[in-house]
Amino acid sequence: MAVQRQLAGLVANTMRSVQALEAKLTPEERQRICDAIEAAKQLQARPDAGLRELRKALAEVEKAAGIIGRAMLRP
Image 1: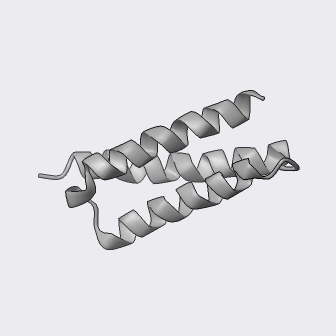
Image 2 (image 1 turned 45 degrees about the horizontal axis):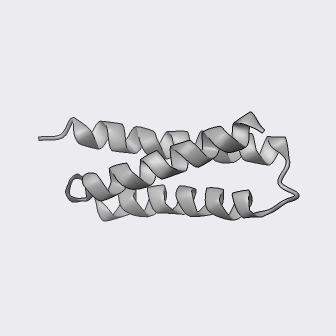
């Protein structure tokens, strides 16, 4: 399923970005990002995960990745 692959890729990239930019993220930002990643991972582990749930998780991880994008612009 394309959404599953997209979600898996975004989770992996977001995790790498969090590690690389950890110093620029506030504790609250890190927590929000990690929560979105963990929820997506748990959903991916479920064989009965529906397309609607996967799309929602993808949207949440995309929002979390946006936090990283904004953090990159900080001095």
